[in-house]
Image (cartoon, rainbow, N blue to C red; front, side):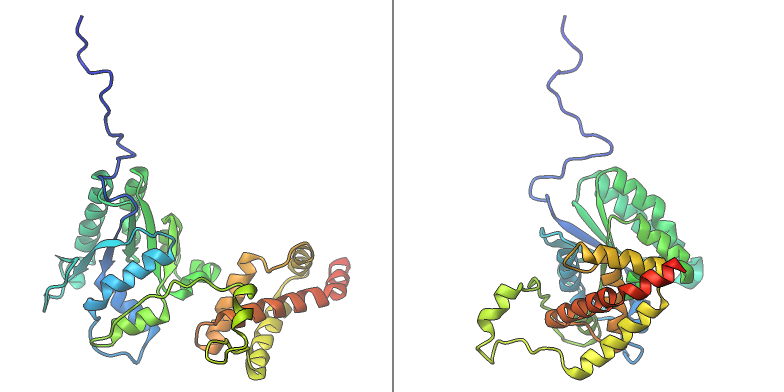
Length: 312
């Protein structure tokens, strides 16, 4: 008897489609221009003029690699209510109604459907989303069920998640839904605000001590050590943080750092964000290394006081 179906026939799973040949590892970006412009105003209040669309492809390609995806950005979908003034390679415009007319519902539907179509048809492996609208969560959830990795694009304020949860819980919930999150860097902000600028993302990993030492004899390549003024500013941030910690939290950190060589990731991220705010800039590798040494020095040197506080 002839079987109705071939036993060797392979069908695509609803929740795990195979990516077409050549698209494995590729990323695409779905960008809400209104959200990106709002973020830009928060980051650089003095910035004037429209968002520089020509820089978007290179900026989001850099963000994909910062998030850990090396396949490259194949296309960017820009959802906007502003008519195009020029055509850009690999940037597809999706016109949506003005936000004041429908409260952004048209944008949510357009972006959400684009996302689920990419997931259903295996158009890419990773999608970067730049939007803060919580109504996208069902679309993101559906895309993730189909095997798509979702990366939310934010600014550095999102790294302080406890504060974000109290200040903007809907945005915090949307970030929680994502597989990963990535923050736009300072050079990227500059590229998106400067007419005619070119953005070349740097992906040099932080060098190890062995990598730095051979360069120390050459002034042209040596990395300067943090100044005394820098150490004074950072020391104050660390001491203020330590003073506000509870006795039990202090004891936990002391015990953890006694048994390790570094700083716990959560503490490291929190203090790195605080120091960046204090200095109004990002830190170099030597500065990060010095900051972590200062954290360990403060925590490990105050152990007796911690013990007394807990015992009392």
